[in-house]
Length: 147
Image (cartoon, rainbow, N blue to C red; front, side, top):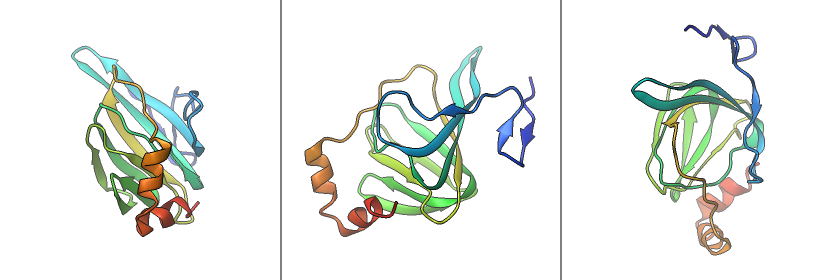
């Protein structure tokens, strides 16, 4: 199977552009496209996420690992207690239970490919106490205020 890429709108043949999540978790201006949903002995899912300028993914953690490759634009990612600038071509590994969030706060869309297991645990949001503790770090406080 071949899914041809369309650079004009960052879409692929026969792939629906979906809302990022339907679970009530907080996010802004994010879409999802599932490019591969496991086959044979490769039980992984490859997804493309697009975050519009000023948007952000859910601040979350979970047991499953992510492998992310920035495919378009630039932005920032919160990993644990650190903020990192990211740009097209960067590869990000997200460890189990590592709190993370992607933001397109550099004035342009941020698009990334994300590889995960087909079968994976549910997302967990940080508690109010965890958020309060995170905001004690100036860098993280500024990150939360950047969108």
